[in-house]
Length: 142
Image (cartoon, rainbow, N blue to C red):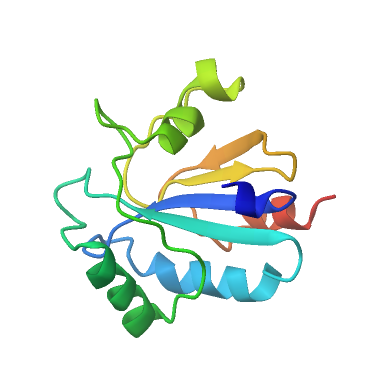
C-alpha cells in the first residue's frame, strides 16, 4: 500500500460472478477520469460471498481485462471477513484499527475510502454506484 502514499484510494472487494460485477465498468470509468488527480482504485478479489469469485489470480485478472478493460490495480485474491480476514480489511473494517468506525463488509463491491494521509475516510455500501455524487465529491475535495 505504500506505493499509493499521497493518493486518495478507493478500495473495493470484487467478484466476477456477482450481480454487482458490472460495477467494474463504472470503476474503470471513474479511474480513467481521476487517475491523473492523485487518485487510485485498488480491487481485492474475494470469495467470501456465495462462492462468487472462484477463479485464481490470473483468471480473475484476465476476466477483468477482457470483459471490462480494467487497468486499475487488481490485487491477489484475499478474504475480507472471518477468521482469515486479510490485514488490510481488518484495518478497514474495525474501529480498533482504523480509529473511525466498524464497517464490516456486507457483500461484494463494498467501497472504502482512504485519504492522502493514509487515514480511513469512510465507506459506501456495495450497491452505491462508484460514480455516485458522494464518491465523486470526495475525490474532488481538497
